[in-house]
Amino acid sequence: TASATASSATNSAASAAQPAEVAAECSTVVESNDQMKYNVSQIDIKKSCTSFKIVLKHTGQMPKTSMGHNLVISKADDASSVASEGTGEGASKDFLKVSDSRIVAHTKMLGGGEEDSIVLDTSKLDANSQYKFFCTFPGHFGLMQGDVKLVD
Ligand code: ZN
View 1 (cartoon, protein in one colour):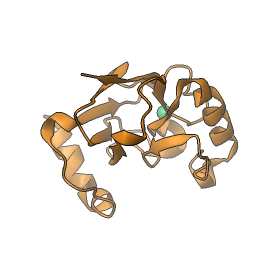
View 2 (cartoon, rainbow, N blue to C red):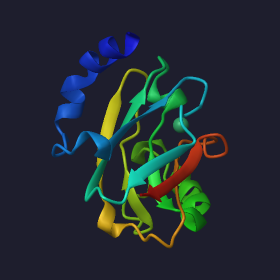
View 3 (cartoon, rainbow, N blue to C red):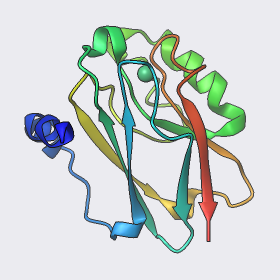
C-alpha cells in the first residue's frame, strides 16, 4: 500500500518523539488527507487502557503550509475556542497555543506524507466529560473534528 512508502519517508522525523510502546488494543491510527478530512469521526478509548496511543498520518501530498493537519484533544465544550485561539497563534507556532491547559494532548502539525503520535494518560480523562479531537489549521475545524469516547 501507499502508506508503507509514506511512513518510511518520515521515520526519521517521527522517531525523535517516539513514545513508549503500548498494547495493540490501546492504540489507533487516524488518517488525514488533502481533502481536509480525517478518516474517522470517533476515537474509542478503552477504559481498561492505562495509556492510549493515537497515530496521526497525513496521507496527502500537500505541504503543511497549505494543508497542514494536527490532532488536538480537549473537552468538547472547549474545542471551538481552543481551535480558534490556536489558529490565532499563526503559522510560526503551528497554529497552536501549546501552553493551553485545556489541551489534553496534541500532535505536531503535519504536511503530506508525515506522521506523528501521542500517548494519552487515560487517567486524565474524566468519564463524565465529553471530549473532541480536531485540527487547528485555519479553516479546518468545521470539517476536521470528531468525538473521543471512553468505552468499555
Ligand atoms: Zn487540518
